[in-house]
Image (cartoon, rainbow, N blue to C red; front, side, top):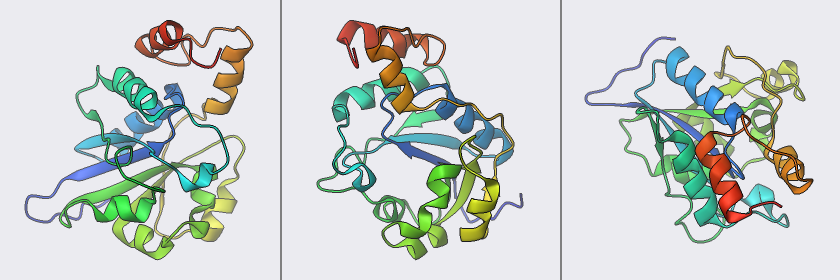
Amino acid sequence: MPRRRYPHDVRIGILGGTFDPLHIAHLHAGEVAYRQLDLDEVRFMPAGAPWQKAGRQVSDAAARLEMARLATEEVDYFTVDDREVHRDGWTYTADTLASFPAQDELFLILGADAAAGVPSWNRTEDVVERATIAVAPRTNSARSEVDAVLTGHVWLEMSRLDVSGTELRAWIASGRSPRFLVTDPVWWYLRENDLYS
């Protein structure tokens, strides 16, 4: 991918989500994006009050933020960005992207299921104008669905890891171990705080 360089700019990958919990598929997408897109860093951004999850129970923001920190702390080009957690009201991607310096080159990392829904987002035009969308393939979403609604996006060349937060929470609630689907520090956090059980 050609690099669009501005003076003192940074290439930042933004991987947002509820991260309830952050799992290996998120980390794999971040790693592939970092390498494939020649990024300077990947920011994992837990959502504060995501409008897409209205009416659904989401774990406490502080717990999700801590799990994100634990999952990423061993990788120096992974950081956790807490700006959405501290924002009042619903969190919208357009507002988040607008909060970055104009000279930063942004790449919004999305699963194919989320990418297919971008046209329904608040201020879609602002989102696709400010960031290049990098799409991680998902087993439950066809490539054609994304290509039909987006232009100028990039597909990440990665394995499809069929892991979801919803399934992990159900797995844990049934008494099964999520070890190796989350990092060991996250696994210990889940056990110590009795989350999802």
